Amino acid sequence: MFDFLRKQFIDVIEWQETPGQVAWRVPFDGHEIQNGAQLTVREGQLAAFINEGAVADYFGAGLHTLETANLPVLTSLMNWDKGFRSPFKSDVVFVSLKEQAGHKWGTPQPITVRDAEFGAIRLRAFGTFSFKVADLKLFIEKVLGTTQEVWADGLETQLRSAIVTAIATALGSSGIAFLDLAANQQKLSDTIKVEVDKAFAAWGLACPSFFVESISLPEEVQTHLDKGSSMRVLGDMAGYTRFQAAQALDNPSAGDGIGGIGAGVAAASMLGNAMSSALGGGVLGAAQAPSQTLAEDPFALLEKLHKLLTLGAITQVEFDAKKAEILARVK
Image 1 (tube, rainbow, N blue to C red):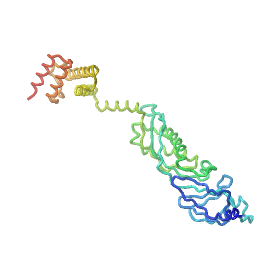
Image 2 (image 1 turned 180 degrees about the vertical axis):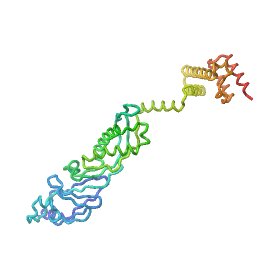
Image 3 (image 1 turned 120 degrees about the vertical axis):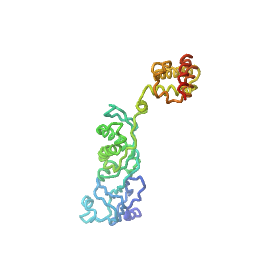
């Protein structure tokens, strides 16, 4: 008798939503809903009555009294319009319509796309996205099913996979070269979002916001790209060689033992050859030295010449001739 009475007093139905919870099935445990029960649906929620796995009726935000008069579809299905006014059995599901924001996505493996400048390249990307329930019936059918509840974290893996596929499609058809992606990041985000929306729609979801925070090449490819950028900044291979040789001379202890000495000699030789070319025909032919040599501190140049002499990169005769020329220019 007590169990029977308990069935008759299920007269208040509501959902205290927890952050990150997308859907929740009311656990009636075999009980029935009392005719005239009160249903409370809060802002941002939707309550759906399920009959044999399909949505029969649903209610938006507000306080509702459950009677045959305001459950037209469910009433017709259950034949309550024939005068049957006893408590009824039905699954009730609450669904959150709020935007589930702050979720991160990324490419676990590089995506191969065809770039306008580099040809086939592999890209990595990451960013953030949000999602929300857009099609109630499709969401209940495809996602909720017969489960008790759905959490946003539980959907992330599935949604991230859809995003990776959408990115490959969007990047392949965007026509934006990799080097121009940074300047067109918002446009790229919008382009990818269109593809993501299409993928999410299959589960009754929508993607209100989608952001690309970074797109990068694999590390080894980026290293080569950085080297190319450095050379373009230097603009002159000869100038770059002279710079590297001078750096090696200023730090002769960078290597160890014989290897370090060999590196120093090689650097000194490069600098000697570079200086000879810069002076137009060797150290001894100094009468036609270019103006950039004169711009250097003569005492610093003498110190470097002495290092070249010590390392054996130039002869004593060459050193004396160059020393005399430099000193003659000092006023």
